[in-house]
Amino acid sequence: MDWTALFLSLQLAGWTVVFLLPVSVLMGRLLAYRRFRGKGLVEALVMLPLVLPPTVFGFYLLVAFGRNSPLGDLWQTLFGHQLVFSFQGLVLASVIFNLPFAIQPAQRGFESIPVEVREAARCCGLSPMAALWRVDLPLAWPGVVTAMVLTFAHTLGEFGIVLMVGGSIPGETKTIAIAIYDRVQGFDDKGAATMSAVLVAISLFTIALTYWLSARVGRRLS
Amino acid sequence: MALEVMAQAQTPIALDISFRVDPGELLALVGHSGSGKTTLLRCIAGLSHPEAGRVVVGGTTWLDTTAGVNLPTHRRRVGVVFQNYALFPHMTAAQNVMVAMVSPDRAEAARLLDLVNLHSLSDRKPAQLSGGQQQRVAVARALARKPQALLLDEPFSAVDRPTRETLYAEIIALRASLAMPVILVTHDMNEAQLLADRMVVIEQGRVVRQGSTAQVMADPDALRAMGIREVAAMLPATIAEHGSDGLTRLDGPTGALYLAGVSGPVGAQVRVRIMAHEVILSRARPEGLSAQNIIAGVITRIVQGVGPGAMVHIDVAGHDLLARITRRAADQMHLAPGDAVHAIVKSMSVARDHVARAPTHRD
Image (cartoon, rainbow over all chains, first blue to last red; front, side, top):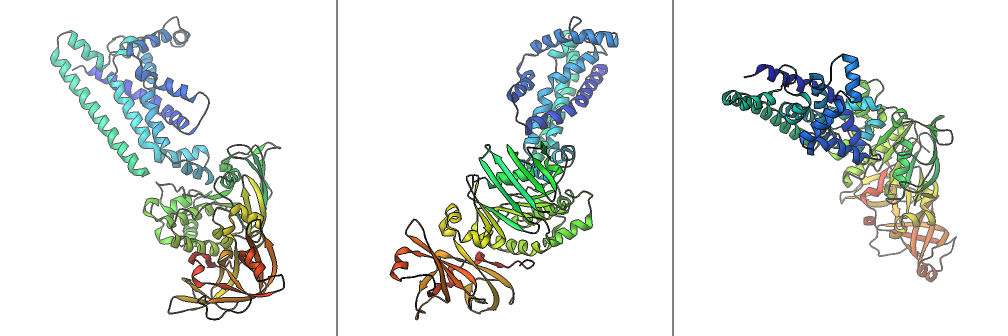
């Protein structure tokens, strides 16, 4: 059992959730409430990581983060090391490829609030910020939590993009999914089996939690 | 504290309307669905934005497109009761009321819930309340903001008829304590006539007629927009006696009226809405007739419509009673202004919800 890899995966998933929580709430709410030009395009872009092969997506991220890219350049001058094959680069990639998981369920959560209830909040004198805290989030939070749970679980399991952008540096970018692959390559079936089982347990727990929460959403708004 | 409204728009619905509501006055905006009345209400609340418009209440400008003023909804001190109440499902009745207060005050919330006869249910959530109870919470919530204007968007349309009658009585009683202008949007002429002081009739985004309820109800143009069968007179009366046979005797300027299904304590002042098309006219006082109500009066005018009908206005002790009869009948009877006639009203032709408590604080 590669505890370093598991710990790294959990850290990666945790940071991804931290960065995506505000994005989930704000983008989910924006896409649920507003109609604007190009909304379809924005929604399609958000969903893109879901359908692109991880290698293709990872390749583009590698190019975008690389030493010759503006972003990679900027990172190098600011922090003195390159963005690709680093934990920070992995977090950034993870934030991007988790966008569909972080935004979609939250958007559905906000969409389930009836328009009149939102309008009533404004008629009660609640500013948009106050309405978010007192009406929108109390009604849509199961959607937001579902989004975060899915993001967490999906980050633990992501393989292709992590390999493309992070490589497999122990303690830096070698996540549990990659560690399992390594064990299989090294004919350590027992190690791979243990780690796989741990991953299955974590994923099963998170998915069960998601289902339980979405059932709650249904009940609250019925 | 008067509310002045002017709105012009092409979308989402063509509008070109202006009117004014005085403090304490209840104005009914009536019209068919799609006439623009709800859109107009939304413009006042700031939920819709007219291309050109002005909304001023008590010296505060909420909207003035020429001056570039357009306060967002949460900065307008407005109370709105939505058609489906739109209560916050995760909050109790008391919390729903308190959320609309500038500084939440439990005692004030209790007072408001008392005002709408709902105190004992203040800890229930909306899902545990009936439609009528939810409507009461919505009214209390709208008042909690101490609004400069109270807007009611078809507030009675989602409840059944008996509940509606109770709610009418409550709104009428509540009005004694309301000092702000009140706008009621409705497509129900009975509701408008029973509750409103003044009416604005809207058709395709334009005002067809505005004036006092009595004026509008007597105007054929206004009623063409609403449907001629909605024409009715409103007579004041006092509940005199509930008979053991289910009929109630009401005393008024018209003499005794016997009506079915009237509720309320003896001595209560009510308004009775008598539909013009239900009234039969007779020159002589008829004998041997099943109808229980024969009201004597004098014809003041006869308005010929474009169709086969004529509207006969009859003065009954200073009140206008309306009878819609055929022109053919008017000719056969040689009816003319100044003639004495008897108006015949069947007890059963006055629907239960056409009798409502009279407002107590005005006139």
